[in-house]
Image 1: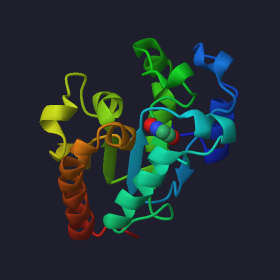
Image 2: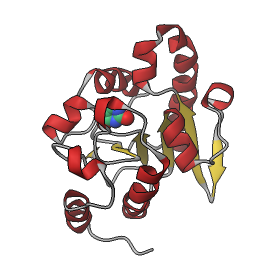
Image 3: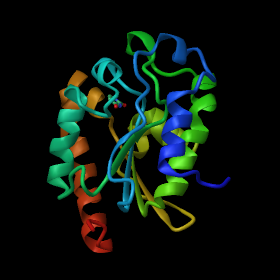
Image 4: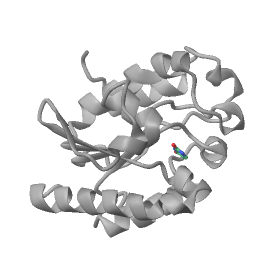
Amino acid sequence: MQAPSLAELSSLIINCHKCPLSESRSHPVVGGGNIHSKIMIVGEGPGAHEDMSGEAFIGPAGQLLDKMMKYAGIDRTNAFLTNVVKCFPPENRTPRPAEVKACLDFLRMQYLLQHPQLIICLGAVASKAMINQEFSIMRQHGQIQEKKGILFVPTFHPAALLRDPEKKPLAYEDWKTIKKVIEEKGLRG
Ligand code: URA
């Protein structure tokens, strides 16, 4: 697969009608941050705030993510934030496998365009899509995975931490790992 330009890719996403989410969305959410950075952060799909604005990770989960990123010494100038599906699943439900399948080429194109060296997968949907279908976030969060020279670190989705704050100490350990990888590999630039 060849990577289109960023503008071409945004236009493909904005005009996409490949799955039913395109009928109910207000705005598709392409992604945000720095597409030229070495770090990619992948969530599940836009929430209600993101759907209203078209901006990635601006709601409560995004605000918690900003804090976790800050802990790891990064911000939106040196990471690119995107999602497995680009349109809001109604009632904030988990995207269906057919919706993930219909949208996955956009994530692949973003990946080809960015060439990240580290991919932080937020939650089960992103970890399954990016690492493998059998991935278990409860059992394998925080375990560094390497595929074709790219490092993947799976961790809890910030929305899951807001729902269940008891998981926060586990997530903190994962972000310690992320911070260490960023420092050791010099990925901030
Ligand atoms: N949750 C996500 O997975 N992505 C967003 O952009 C917002 C909330």
